[in-house]
Length: 505
Ligand SMILES: [Zn+2]
Image 1 (cartoon, rainbow, N blue to C red):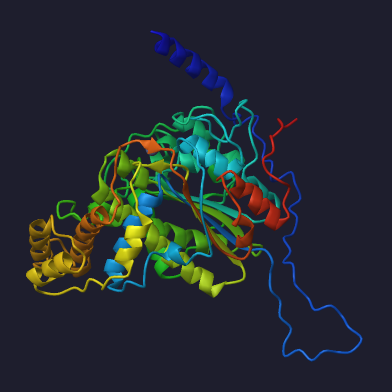
Image 2 (cartoon, rainbow, N blue to C red):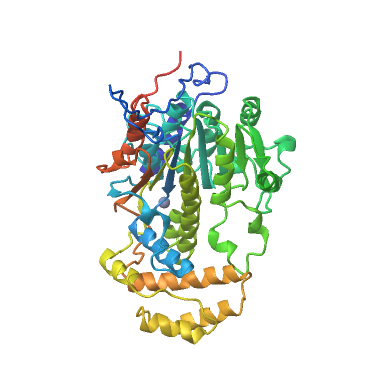
């Protein structure tokens, strides 16, 4: 009974705690003169005697492109799954997951769940569970996206979960109930984020969205739309181009392929709710319907293409949102595919980094850990020193390797069956079959070398704060995820965070 009353009180409070309605909402960014971002140049001090210099060098001290990657629930255990999988895929023990090459590798304190975890990363405060973009007193906080906008940078928020899910919401919305999805979407115009991509059509589009959405999402379902009537017209009025559902996915892919994808502001929402688990892309039963859903990496490529049109640069948050959800199912195998896709994304971003080495900073972190994984870095390092697993056509040969070289014996019979299945190409393409086998081998190897899921809940374990690129040194002594936006402002010379957002007059 008490809980019920609390819930009613909570819902009533909610009405008063969410974003401004469109009639009162003001575009804060339009009212401010964007300061032109400058690149600080290290120059050689003038001397009386000219010193011969081969060529003048200009090394930026702050990045132009900032990527904040959040693995939801991504702790040390999930990382080890990725580190094992990457070595299987490359058949090279020296080629691990992309984050293993990052120059700053800290494990830091996070929060208890995604709303407060995301708010720590977007706004720089420790707040209550379920609070999004608000401090513990319920006051709206400026986000790192607000700061980037004010400085004339483009901004992007991408997720493979619903766009109104807690983590992406913390970069655009201000509300005390993370489950108030339509109210979260109602905050998008005020946030003015330029590139928005992910799932979650249902809370953004109104029941009758008109000809921008033909009713079929990229998973070939017909989602029931419950968004506010005024929201879509308002966003389109602001200049957002729309890529919705199956037709939107096809359009985005074709425009990306022929180089014509160039909206400056866009809403790219492909599925009714969360996007499909990566696991299903490799499942024999899934058919082709999941093939029409853009991956996290594809959405990020589109985001880079769109936001690169801003000459100042951009700040982009990309959430790998389903790692947490797999751990809630206690499904290590499904989680491996999500971590594999996160690593694919980081490899893609490392290509971008190598093209713009002095202008890029990539931050990899998490809002909290899920699964309370065991992990044993000493054992894992012993495994990393072993011989690589090589693909062979002979299942018993591969099983023998796993048993003799890696000591993965307990499940060798199961493995042999999997290897035979994979070799028979039962699942689809050769790489699909290999992915399927590598996931199995990763799971067994992880168990053998100390990585095992222990619960289906969030834990208080430390999370990665791994950083590479210009400005990354500032993170060397970080101990908490809330330092991320403060450090970015520090490097960029932006007004410090956290800061309470005073109500607009
Ligand atoms: Zn969770």
